[in-house]
Image 1 (cartoon, rainbow over the protein chains, first blue to last red):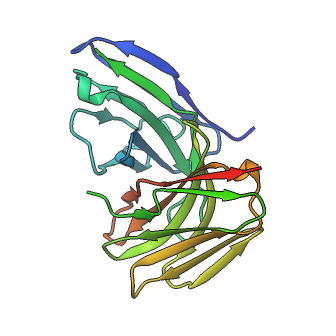
Image 2: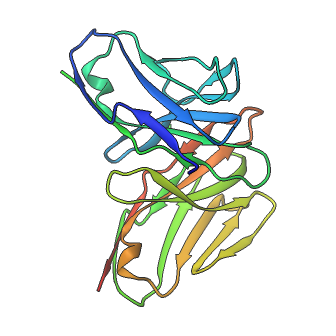
Length: 114
Length: 112
């Protein structure tokens, strides 16, 4: 089954404790992206990757890191989480960003930083 | 910064009625997409319209794009209770990269 998986689905952590949210897709997609969703603000793009070893900042990259060492994986790293990073995070992937494409989303990771 | 802005923020209709949601954006785009989200779950792609297209259909969905007004509309015909969800527009900016901007969404409630 074609899917984007994220782990963990729920995470409660404390300020300053480094964490990684994993994202994996099984569709051989080139493009992957991370978003955060906050009430009243819709989704905001954190980082995106056009392909292996190619990443770029989205709208709200501060406080986050990403890496794309393999095509299927795109982990999101919070080196020193703060309470304002409490949010619902989504990973997404698509084959391309040219022409007609469909972006597939993971189920989300709900992160609480205390 | 918010690129896509949906209107209305919330919409409540009876089953069988049509639902129309609007999206406005600020800068030049490659395309505009509409997504549906059920209560805190992942988003589901509904339809993509390219910047050189004016109208597109998919089942009960009709999307229009007016690049001169920087706006788009999503029409859901003959709505069903299962259409109850939040709907988001998203734009891929025409900046050489592939940054995507989402709007804040329209919450649609369809009463059975």
